[in-house]
Length: 187
Image (tube, rainbow, N blue to C red; front, side, top):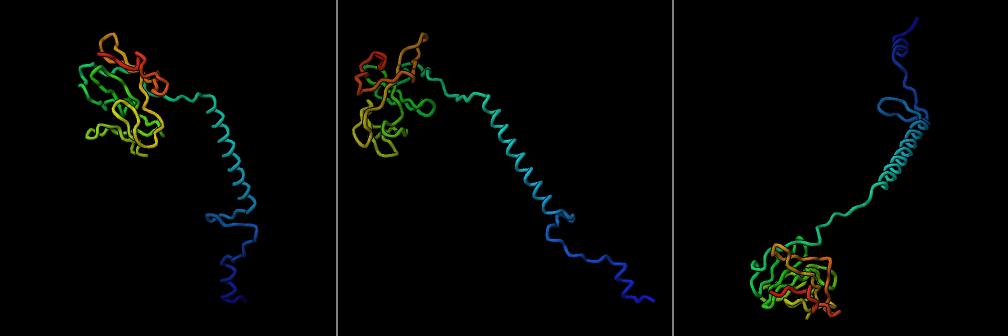
């Protein structure tokens, strides 16, 4: 005859100890070697996929789209005598200055480390916020660590009478190029 305790032990599943080489994952018994094998294959396939994507990327050229180097800056009448126009400072990094003799286009890039100076109307100078270089409205440096004056760009009149600025053609004062006819537009 069987006792109640023996019947209960036969009916209920026995709790077996988990072998050391197995892990329990989501209620499913997975051997540790199988789990590590699947992880290793996943890492391998991910690495191979990365190499394939990088190889395909090499087939396409690396192109940098920049703003055009030549632009029209309006008509000479749009600029008052003694005025420093900051209209093109953000888009093309150019100031257009109207002197009594005519117009010239200055680079809005400090010759020290390439920061963008600001025009200080009250002091009539360009002041670099990075290291304090100062430039007259003509572009000549007079204070701070800037080693040379600002650069001028080619400026001319287009066929329709507008000012044409070409930032690919640079004139430097230290090379004596500010006297070049294309560095200044006589009006």
